[in-house]
Image (cartoon, rainbow, N blue to C red; front, side, top):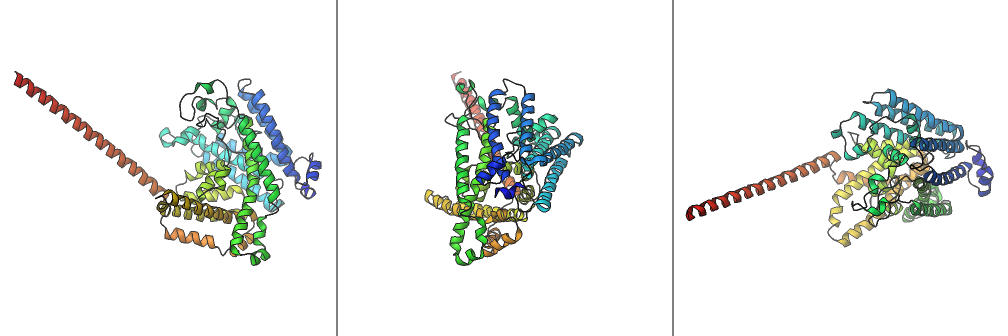
Length: 520
């Protein structure tokens, strides 16, 4: 296997002997070794280039140069695309007007990413994951577009036009070129992300990331014990590295035993009862997810080791290092709704889609968000089939939650029954939805759906037509009207109370006057 993929690896061949010994593709070996190198470098970065010991300028320079080195080692000259994409977008930020700069940056960054994905897939190696330099570009695209919208919010909008989260994320000055490149291409996130807000990254570089959360514990009260020393990420880094080791072992053990491709094998389809096909599909997807758990958890551990990711304290006083975490494994595996699964899977990408598209799109934000997600992932047709199916799944899940769930909230027993049923339904629906994402091509994906008679598609369509769900804008309007009504009621009660007090005051005064008259 290793020799077959050497030609498609554009990065360094220094680790070729190791690739042949362990029989893994060279590009994957390069990636893992570079991430382990980044982990050790992150420890050194936190200890010896601490904000108290050096300036933000030095931290920016070192983080950027190390990031470029890792990119060159993994992808060779393809890493130049990272610079080209970042340079074009920065030029737009500087020279375009603030009014429309965020839109132009969005088009340039996403357009250049799509161009690279099209050339890689249809010109070089269709269906190959080797030497996928567009992976880091996907994260850089998220950072570029997020920063563009944050600058627009900070410099072109009035304060009252922003939501609370937008006020927190708004950038009040144009970043320098060094700050911009450091944010996009630092060694901690150049290979696997995750994305983060520009303000959070700058707080980490300047050493102010602990201050807002450092003076408060989980209950919002000052706790002098935590002011004496910075919280250490050691325990969280060790825990996440253990999770990485377990995830990698599970993936290597099961991925070849339960391949997803067997679901479209003619012999398997004809000889296996349908209920066993459902169970097999669930197990195949269960065996595939640890690959993502390994990559994202390792990336999170690298950032934490560098001192980035502190997010306050838990109720027991222990520090939280989940500011830029990308997943919550237990919440994924035990999700009882489609939304709960998506909220805990690739969290930072979901936040990016929400902030850039869902909250800002005036027409059908759900469909627009899924379409953007498909374009961002790449040009394989399977991605679009997955996200089109995801739209139907989301609408059907919303209909069930709004119309059926209230009947199961009358007792704890009913609630537990509902949770078990929705857990099983969610796992089957997720597995069914992401099959094209794994198979990539249209033919195999449609073959799989035909073998299932498009049953879940039809069920979603039936639920959406049969169970009414109010639109997001209508729900928001009703919620606002309800708040206003409650406010008016409170104002009315307060007015009545004041009037009663006023009447009581007059009555008391009159009584006192009468008593004085009688005494006189």
